[in-house]
Length: 180
Image (cartoon, rainbow, N blue to C red; front, side, top):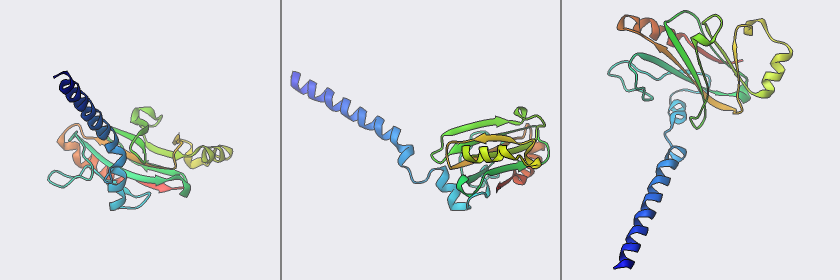
């Protein structure tokens, strides 16, 4: 009887280890991650709306209906990535993710001197080159030096009530993502 109990407990322990390992490895081995979904819709340096309107299928799942969002994939081997928008909304935030979806950097409109969205994502080598001779157009930009070459930028705009929805949606759609 003791051997049966021992074998049963070992079997349960083994099954638990396998299930936990599968759950932890799932994000790394899945084929339809955020990068793949965005790549299916548009190429690099192209802004993709991800929040969708009510009733539309959303590209990525967002849990907060008060936010409008868009994403842009970048590849720093093609040049530094610049994300820029004009205008004002009550609140915006931006997050930079590596290709596997790990957050590298985040900030919001309260983190900039002017409140404007003007971001440069660059590699350490690009940062050294840019520091040698900073163009005037980048004087108010936020610089994010990343250790990765490929990644995603996600811009979110907050609409505090339904009357703000069109303004925030227009602002998010006006965001540009370019290789400089």
